[in-house]
Length: 286
Image 1: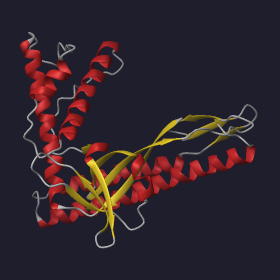
Image 2 (image 1 turned 135 degrees about the vertical axis):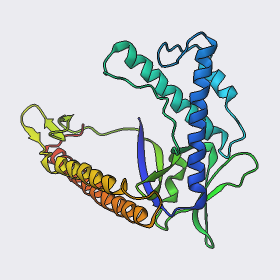
Image 3 (image 1 turned 180 degrees about the horizontal axis):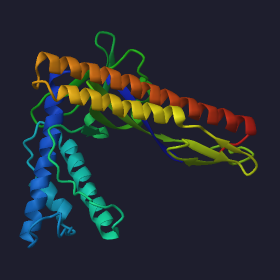
């Protein structure tokens, strides 16, 4: 059985990071322009009004994308695949009519998360430079060299399938995707069904007794997060962009939001820990 696991790692920012994510956004913009051109060639005035996807659409877009980007070819393909997947989802939702005022994925972006696949990832470890990961870039460009913490587990690097460079509220992060294969899972005596929700994060039932997790604390944190964002954004909007006060308020906003996000993660972690303890107590393995 194959499982997908994800891991987030905070890293120190480097000057090329913003340039790389800006290049991913440029690929997204080019995909938007190519989609409009593809639709216009087939007689549709606007892609989002009378949308049509031919069998050649994705391949045609891939061939016409600019290859002279600072990004690795697979990183460019990942942006194109994400854009095409968004259009397919949009067309399905438009046909079913499940969402009102549905907007197409044609918004231009300044920055976008950059994606590397396994063949563009190299891990190295030495006594002089420590643990590092090298991410391949476009032709003729040096690989992106990122230092990893000393406690990073190098024994699982062969399981890493993808890496994403993410900017999250003033903090740069690497998001790893692991593919882990488990030959056999030992099942317990019973089975517990879990229903995820917003008011109650989890409602569990094993056929005899129910276990309900109260989500009031986590909901209050989400409300506080929205309130803090609204307050800071209102104050920042009154400042001149990139002025001294603008940067001061922006850094304070990032710091406060990260603290609330950590509280939300901690609350969810406590719920899942309690659920696992309950499963172990009842002898349930599924």
